[in-house]
Length: 356
Image 1 (cartoon, rainbow, N blue to C red):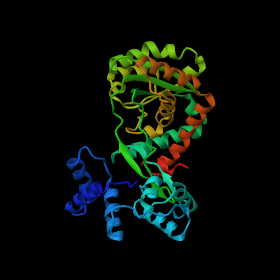
Image 2 (tube, helix red, strand yellow):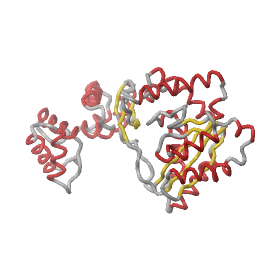
Image 3 (cartoon, one colour):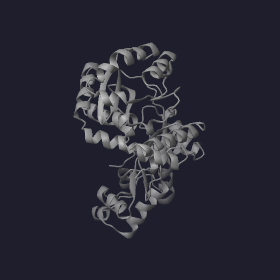
Image 4 (cartoon, rainbow, N blue to C red):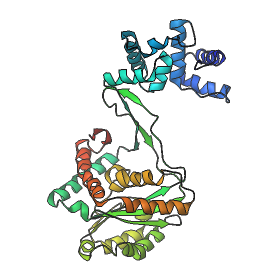
């Protein structure tokens, strides 16, 4: 059975050539003109036009079953030509366009050491952020050099939001290449969720979770720090609490004047955050263990199946926290050292693609 009906292929080609062979415009125009039809990416329009030029036909040239599975020089060249022309193609698309067996295409790509690198989501950075990230990384790295246990003395904190729809699925985004092309996409994490949760990490243990039932504002956050945080820390030894540093990011609730005044009193010269003498750099989730490790780990556990209610989601979050071992947490906190070094080496810019 052909991938396209002849009518569908002719309609696509008509739109493509009417768009002066601009695949970006063609993709958009086709979706408007045929709203009930299938959506096709710009690369499909290009391949369809190339096939028409090369073969005079809109359908792939059918191969005999043996030819579909044969590792001939021609098949190898055609597969490699496909990923060179469009590195975003999936194995299935290549196999379909060339009329080859899926496993044959997969074998050819592996033999030539081509790997399907997935898109990496990263927070957008502004030019002014680089120096702030660099200053913070240098300072924290020096603190660790003086005291190798310093990271475990920090209560790393953050809030996250969860919805029943789960998380972004990156599985079908590919870029075939012999080396990692460092393909990235900027994303904005300021979304609305149904459950708001706070967690902390201190001395290899997860503190919390604690759920906020309302929008987090300065006065509510202050109430949490004064009344609820001490309860969450009841099982932490007094010695650890006396030497503990407090870390937070720069969200508006954290920056409230009453919150900063309280932190200056409760943690004199021992808190990290916006407005502190040890400021937290904006837009830096790659430098805090809650963001680069914990939330993703919890979401993987929570969304194995879709939560049914907010209460169900809360219970799943509690269960996920209980299931994570101290060794795993400590290893993730220690990874901060490598991240600081990479941030310094890259002058405060994105460094995730440098991690091995």
